[in-house]
Image 1 (spheres, rainbow, N blue to C red):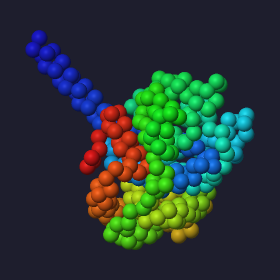
Image 2 (cartoon, rainbow, N blue to C red; image 1 turned 120 degrees about the vertical axis):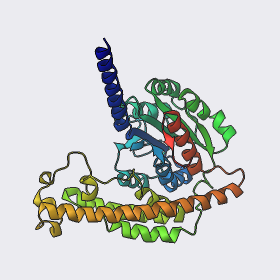
Image 3 (cartoon, rainbow, N blue to C red; image 1 turned 180 degrees about the vertical axis):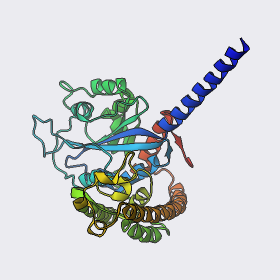
Image 4 (cartoon, one colour; image 1 turned 90 degrees about the vertical axis):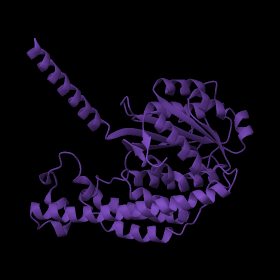
Length: 374
């Protein structure tokens, strides 16, 4: 009897250990889907610029989370003259994607023009047409921003029904009203968030994209230049991927020093991955084998190398990148401390970046994520 009891105890211990190891492995990463929906009618240019200026702040906030998010971002515009009345004046520019440079490129390409903003229909479109993660542990979030009545077109497309449907699918709806908070309540934007179990915020578009310069900006810019030299483009997407990376660096720089530095910090973190065109990221994918890459898809300088030489070449680039990313994170921490002090002196201000970071942090932690340094 004692023998069987001992065996049972050992088996139980092994099962517990296996479960613990399985859970640990499963929680190394977790899906995070974020859909950004922007009213691009004629009066929304300031908030669109603010979104462009602050989107990397949100990426960086998620980069502090554990388990590491498997971040995908989708982009929808509504109230746009790029779509017809039959289309609800809605354009899905990008399905949920982990290519953050592509997301940023699409965001920078949005144009202002239009006038009919159907919030309910836009939410319906996002729920039906985005490839939302089916993982039970996934965080699924919508940020929808506008400045007209959320009840436009309510007879056919009631945002309340869409928000309830989102809630039933564990998708959180956050509402950003571009203007006075009291007017946002009148226009029912607070109700969009209430029904969607999300956050309602009112943003002053004229101040939402103010840039804060910091002593670390010059250092971050230097590190970014070095970081870009560690990328090894391959295949059909290689040249375009590298070109787009440089183009989005330029776009962020045009918006101001804070946007530029915020993007650089994101590039130094775990959420910025370019495995579709960069060999350093590609070779980290599970199951990667060199024979899956044709000789013609390799950079010319690698084509005459042996497999061992290729692996060594990429490992050298990876080590360089990791060292640079470590320096970026160090400079980022110092910059973050500086910016916090500046913001603390501006009593009463609530910029778009700070608002979105706070919201995504709270909602991620409510979903079971933890946050380094929060």
